[in-house]
Amino acid sequence: MSDAADRVQVEDRNDTRWIRLNAPERRNAYDQAMADRISDALESANGVRTVVITGVDRSFCAGGSLSTMSTPTTGQMRVLYRASLRLFDAIRLCPRPVIAAVNGAAAGGGNELVVACDLAIAARSATFGQTGPKVGSAPVTGATNVMSVQIGEKRAKELSFLCRRYTAEQALELGLVNAVVEDDELEAEVQRWIDELHEKSPRYLEIAKVSSNIWWNQSRDSFTNGLGMLVQAVGSDDMVEGATAFLEKRKPQFRLTEDV
Image (cartoon, rainbow, N blue to C red; front, side, top):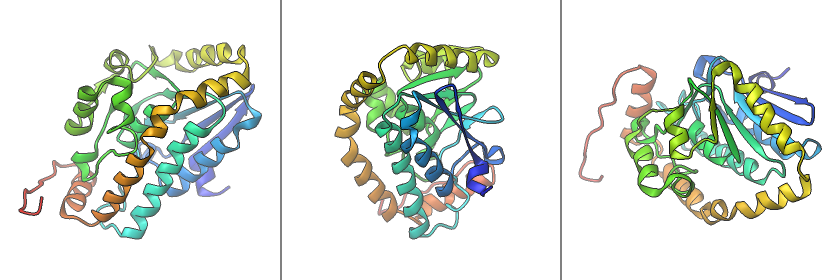
């Protein structure tokens, strides 16, 4: 079994494809190989009725892995950014409803993963929030654009700028998730939503999903422009300091310079 296959477990069960992120040592942060495997699983989901994305070990997803951002190269980061965009697009282009079963922390790109999914059910212990400006990045693939449609512009900027953490109940109030249940009830609750979806026409669910993508599609240029700007900022002092501070578990020391 390949490393990516071990780190992203894919199981078809009762007409549902379960995609489980399995990199607990980094809170299920994904690298390019993991993102590509998730995308492949989504792009080949025609034979099931629903898809669920979740994580292992009380973590949902910490977004893109920061392990290379303290010593980044433009090529490495361009590949990871493109893999991230492909992943989020794969969720939106998947013909089946995609449910985020948020079993733990959804941080940075993991929070944007929730934004991209059609529905989201959260365990009570789950937390949510963006990390970009705190770690030398910016959340340009959902949080600065589509999330504004979901929860309102001022709230989306609050999440994107301040990098605060939010409880599952707060995420429900904001509109980031559809329901919150006790931790040991998460899979059962997700199954109830699955069962209800399976009573509906797959053909017309797909039509409803494609139609609902209007705001995602309108934001697509924003994604690519934002990623282009991030590529140009690869190796900046703020990127290196943010990632290094995160890996060293300390507060970053960002400096204001004349060219910022």
